[in-house]
Length: 79
Image 1 (cartoon, rainbow, N blue to C red):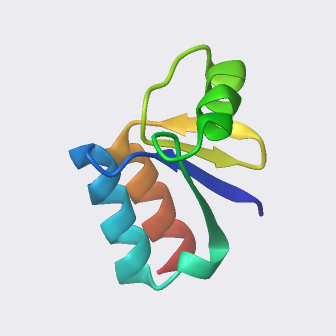
Image 2 (spheres, rainbow, N blue to C red):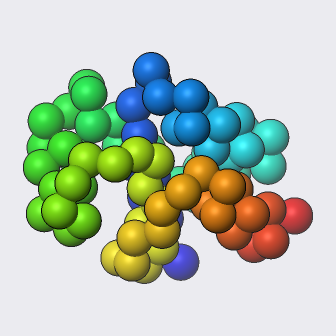
C-alpha cells in the first residue's frame, strides 16, 4: 500500500494526523509532502484534487480527505 500525506505545519488538522502517524509509529510507511516547503507537492495536490486542501492522504493514488477519516483509517490499518 502506497501512502502519501499532503500537509503543512501551520494546519491544526494536519498536525492531528501527523500525531496519529507518530503515535502509531508508522513514519516509515507514509511519505510526507509539505506543500508549503515544496511547491512541487502543492502542484501535485492541485493536479490530483483540484484544490490545496490539507490534510489529504493518498492511498494507492486515491485521495482521502478530512482529518478524522484519515486518522480512523490509519488506526484501523495499523493498530
